Image 1 (tube, rainbow over the protein chains, first blue to last red):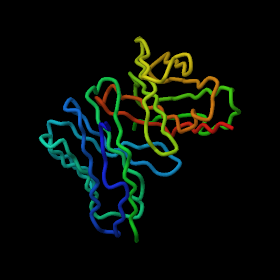
Image 2 (image 1 turned 45 degrees about the vertical axis):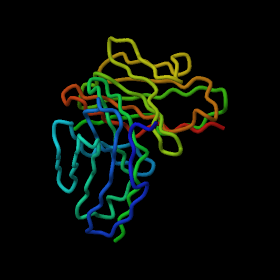
Image 3 (image 1 turned 30 degrees about the vertical axis):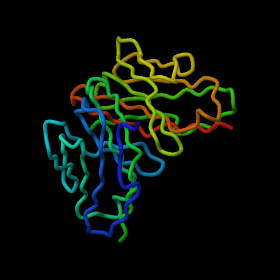
Image 4 (image 1 turned 45 degrees about the horizontal axis):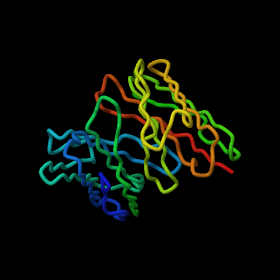
Length: 113
Length: 116
C-alpha cells in the first residue's frame, strides 16, 4: 500500500493560472510534509513545507493547504510561470529528527506561455 | 543558505565494479544524512540513515555490505555502491538534515550511476 499518493500524475496550465497539486497519505503518524521541486537532471530542491499543527503555509506564490482529518494536502502555485515547469514531489515524515521521508510518485507540471 | 554538494555528478561503470560518491554539506551542520536512490521512473527509495556518532541504519533490501557508508563529521558523508549491476542504476541522492532548521532535509544534485 502506497503511503503517499499524488495526483494528478501530470498537469498542464497556462501562464498566469493557478496550478493545484494534490497529495494524500495513509500513516496518521506523519506530521511533517515537505514539497520538493525537481528539474530534469537535477536533485530535488526543498520548496515549502508544513507541519500537521498548521492548516496553511504560504511562501510567495506557493501555498500548502492541509487537512489533517482527511489526510490530504495540496500545493497551490498561483500566477504560474513557464519556469515553474518541473516535477513536484510531496513527501511525509513522522520523525523529523532523522530525515526519513516517504515520497509520492510526483506530479509533472507544465506551464505553457 | 544550506547547500549540499555531491560528486561525482555522473559515473558510468562496468558490471561488477564499484562506485564511490561523496556528499558535502556547506553552510550548515548536517546532524543526519539520508541516502536515497531515485529510479529512472523517478520513485525514491531510502537506502540508509546516518547520524554522526550513531550506528547507520539501513532499510530493508539495502545492506552495509553492498552500500557501505562513512559519516565522519557534520559536513561530510560518503557511500560506495559495491559490485554494481544493472538494477543499481539510478540517481543517488544525499539528503542532509540541518540541525538549525529542524526536520528540513536538503538534497544535493545527486550522483547518477549508469551500469554497462
